[in-house]
Length: 200
Image (tube, rainbow, N blue to C red; front, side, top):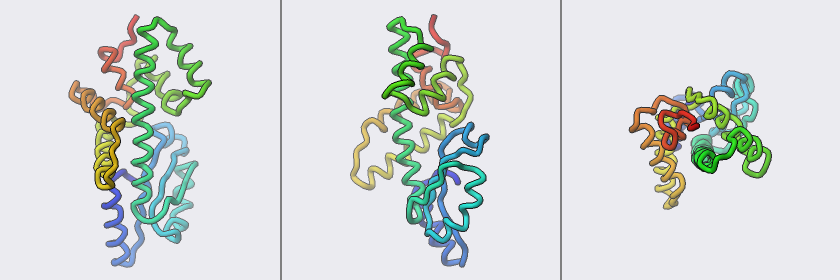
């Protein structure tokens, strides 16, 4: 259930099939809270029969479980998820940096934006953590960089440019270079707030 290159998932599926075994790729989303509460989103790539055999196990771990298609499709879906998260995380941290510089009450800003069209899972779950200066990892910076690298490599194979995702990866690499690779992805705010301390 790890996140890997879609091509690797396809190779594993084919080798398993040759050996008379079953294989599927089933990366997840939902972070530490999703794992603890068995509410993970599980993205599955395999043949339908194998998916149906594994479904009872997935139902013990996740809430949203979807057969995305053939082997590798689960990994491609996870890449799409990470591309989206890259945008929401950079947007959220820049929102907070901007609001703080403008002299706004950050708690009020989170509540207001979270109640409108800017609402996202990242804003609702990671925004409050940032304001508490909690940078523990629901998902590690170093793992996010790895995932974005896979996404960009796969996009390159499809002759697809993803400039926003590329920019997000570069920001996270800057964060890792500062020694924060083992923090959670919400630590991106540390590029604006030294050591993640909320400015007075």
